[in-house]
Length: 62
Image (cartoon, rainbow, N blue to C red; front, top):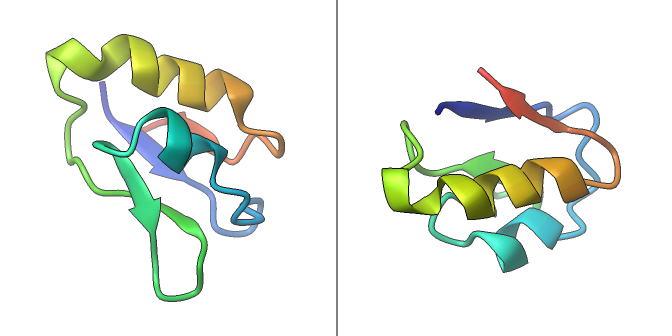
């Protein structure tokens, strides 16, 4: 699975980073970014949870 963060929707709340820090981090503007080109197979469930719990729906599958 590949994910993407829409920077126009992201508010930098950090929900995704706290749920799945192996896939998400903050960029220089304190907005979320995807740090794993492809979500490692063992982290699919956590990455999906982060996607589903984003309050602004800024995360989507690429």
